[in-house]
Length: 310
Image 1 (cartoon, one colour):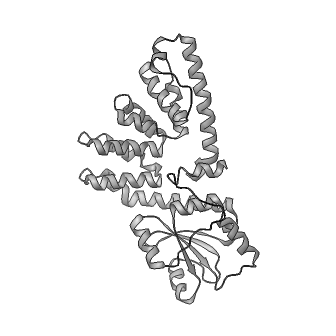
Image 2 (cartoon, rainbow, N blue to C red):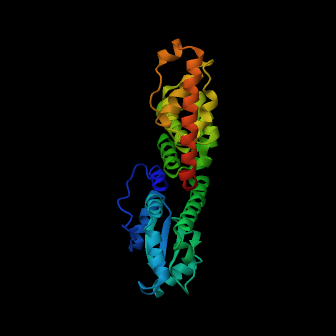
Image 3 (cartoon, rainbow, N blue to C red):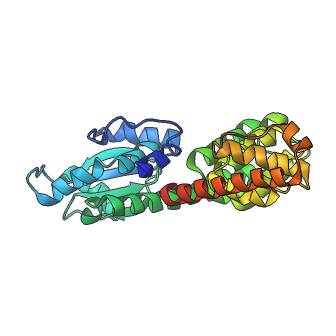
């Protein structure tokens, strides 16, 4: 349950209905490629055999693995899923992609431009744990290339239009491109950055929640309410990073961190501003220790169930 619940974050709130509902593989190659090029999502080809072998042990294992909730969530959120029969008319395409034509029942990850990213062999497709690992690593490789070729140049171009910068930031959030943090931090240094783009940049740093991004966001949150609002959307791991700021002797920084980590980790029984103004030191330390323990617990659970597929 925890394994799947964590992935709801990747799907941006999308709900996968039923473990028995299979991945919807489209056979419309033209429409699928057009969708991939429009959305910039990579293509996931299931290269089938010449005919279905429903009584085949490998085929049954693959069907079970491809119905796995986490596998399905990853495919639905990150890929354009297409079925590609291993027919004579498709063999030339497979050769172009450097894929086998002598057997099928494997997965092929391809960029919208038609460049092969990864091939997942038949027995790995039949193992849901291995399949999660390989689908995730292939997506990481793809999104890294997307960032280097299409997103980084926009973020680093001071002449880029606001529309293009906004689109680039949106893609960073959608694909959780963690290597974008330096470029976004640099973007925030521009004095002429308008309020809307600055807010979008803050939200993007919160979404990817890297160490340096969270540090930048926290410092901005001390004087900027948009940054403070974004800080409260970071991950539990980012909340744990902020625990060092929970020092009641520095009330301004402490309150920003306290409000952020308690919101991120859904901690109840939080103390209002007047508590920090009037309570004695012992009570303040007890509350901060309580919050630290709860944040560390939440961060550990989040890391265990979610970090590897992020």
